View 1 (cartoon, rainbow, N blue to C red):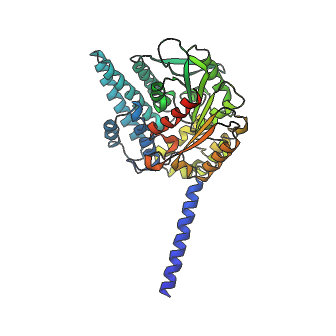
View 2 (view 1 turned 60 degrees about the vertical axis):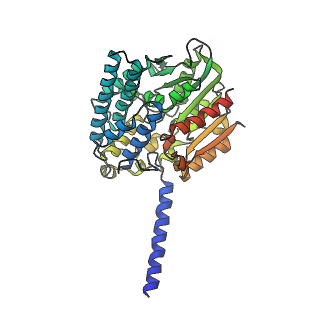
View 3 (view 1 turned 30 degrees about the vertical axis):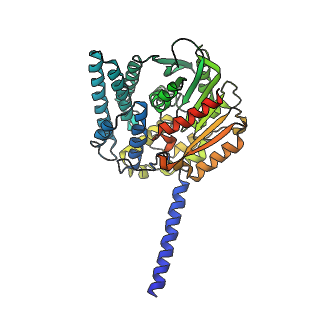
Length: 419
C-alpha cells in the first residue's frame, strides 16, 4: 500500500511539474533572464545582464564598474538601483571631464560614453513623475553627444518634424564627406531611448561602413511628457524618419535597411508594408500582432493588489511602460487593450527580411506562433530565420546579452543583401 501511495504521489507531482512547465511556456515574459547574472529579482537581473552588461562590447559598460555598482544595490529595490547608477554615471562623467581637461581625448570619449549609458541605466525604473527623470535623460544625451564630438565622423544630434513636434535622435555618417553609403535605421521598442539604440548596434554598424540613424518615436524617450504616446499607426513616424534619412546625400537610396527590436519588431514591418524605399528589413523578434502577446504577459492580470506584491523595481518598470502607452500606472491590465491594432500583414512586406529570435524566447509558444505567421506570410522570396543558441549566451530578449553575435548575424546578412 505504501508503495502504491508513493507511486500515486510521484505521478501527481509529475503532472504538477508538467502543468507548471506548460503554464510557463504559455506566459510571454520579455524580461525573463534565461541565465543568472547577479540579482535574485528576475526583472532586475534581466536589466543588469542584458541592458547593462550587454553594452560592454559597444563601449557602454565596463565590467568592473558594473559589478561594483551592482554590489551596492539592494536586490529588487528601485530606489537603490537609481541611486547607485546615478552615482556611477557621475563618477564616469567626472573622470571624462578630467581626462578631457588634460587633453586625453580617447580616455575622455570612453568615459563619457559609459557615463551616458550609466545615467540611462538609472532611468530603467524611474516613474514619469520623478523630478530627476528629465534631467537624467538630458544628461545622458548631452554626454553621448560630447563623446561623439571626439569621434571622426562625429555623432550628430538630429530633430525630425512630426505631428506638430520634433522627434529627436542620433546620426553618425559612415565616413567624412557626402559619398553615399549603406544606411541602418534602428527602431526601438516600448521602453527605449535613442541612446540605448546607439549602444545596441551603432558601433558595430559603423565598423561595417554603415551610416547609422536612430530616433525616439512617439512613446519613446521623453516624448510621452509631451503627450505623444504609442499609437497603432507607427508607420507614420517611421516614414518621416525615412524622409529625413533620404534627404541626406550620404544615404544610398538603394541600400537602406530598417531594423526593429522588441516592440519595434512590429513597428518596423508596419512601415515596410507597401514601402519600396526600405530595401531590407530586420525584426528581432517579429511582432505580427501585439495584443495577443501582451494578453499572455504578467501585466494582463496585474491588478493593483497583485502588483503590490511585486518588487518595487518590477512594479515601477512596468508602470513606466504603461505611461508610454497612455495607460494609468495602476491599471497595468489596460496595456492589453492599449496594444490593440499594433499589427502588420506579412504578405504586404516585399523587402528581403531577416527574423532573429533568441533561444529563450523561441521556447515560448506565442512567440513561435507569431514567428511562423511572419515567416510563412512574408512576400519576399529572400527571407531568413535565425534562432540564436543558448550555449553561446544568446537566450534573452533581443539577444541583448550577446550583441557581438546579434550584430554579426544582422550585419553579415545585410552585407549580402545590400551589395
